[in-house]
Image 1: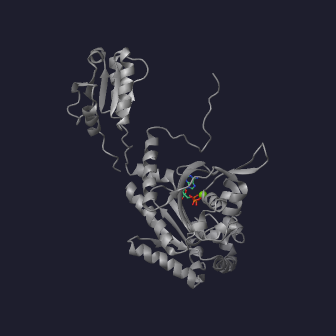
Image 2: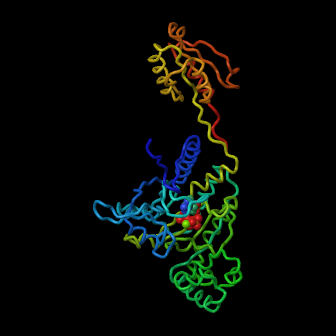
Length: 434
Ligand code: ATP
Ligand code: MG
């Protein structure tokens, strides 16, 4: 035997019945996006490395140490498996001039790749759903994006996610704050841990994000970005908050919320939960007004978010969500080989009427086929035996309580399938209730 091959560490197979939960989740997302007028965009999984270096920023965890980058052996191009999709959406909008007739609302879903230490809620191939608005400057789309995420939690039956909000201002305001921060931390050099000392001149804002309890007091007393914000930034922030309040959405302003990517300005937000341990952020986003220009487009404002599908589904499972019901309406048992063609034809007619029908494949006598029918969770077995074949009919046997008595059976003619179709359709399992 040849040596066994396994999936790459941190990259997971998605198998049935778990995959049904993903399908259901994706259908909810599609409905959500349609409800808000967001249109689907699909960009390649591989992009030029330069797109992410320029788009995400050189001094970020992603670009410094998490990207799967390689040289195309055939033509020497520097390529990267996308670690996120905002930069690619922006690239596509520029490349195809999508903003020529005004702003756009777009959404995507798909795998992203980051070389991180695999653990619960953190994988090397993971999946995001993202929503991006390009060309709109006002706080209205910031609020819309946040409320859209709220609606998704409602659709999924999730109640334990809360909203944190911050305003990062504009680059000049951040620069002023940065200088004050550096001066402040320099005065307290001996209280800084090693990480903080390393970040002091490179990215002092990130020191505010420290998890070290010994530094909390120091960090709490540090100069605040909000005190550096000018009138326009404050007005934007207040605009977002007023719309959220009017919509009945609670939030906390978290001045330490700085986000891992360089491109954010003004509004940033995270939806967080306490039920996923250290990986508590399920959805994160904000405004990135500078990115389109950074990537080579005509300057235009933009705002968006991305959610981690694995984390959201982990939350759902913890809430006791059941795997969606995917029971077929019928399982066809073939007890008389010459009836195969008729059975197959009947299955096709039922499927054309919208029913889900599994036709037995492989060998097996009546008894083992009935076991398979049962295991398929089908509501009914359709039995094609010798007598049925002779009579141009099929035996319909109910396999579940609630579809008449389980075990009840009757002979139905194949002349007209209307009655059968009606009976099978009426036995459809209830839609998933989270
Ligand atoms: P974190 O601080 O958890 O590393 P991040 O700031 O790097 O998150 P973003 O780039 O904002 O994450 O991505 C948006 C969302 O995608 C995150 O909030 C999270 O839900 C999810 N996500 C990010 N990285 C991973 C990963 N390696 N595995 C699974 N989900 C992830
Ligand atoms: Mg990260």
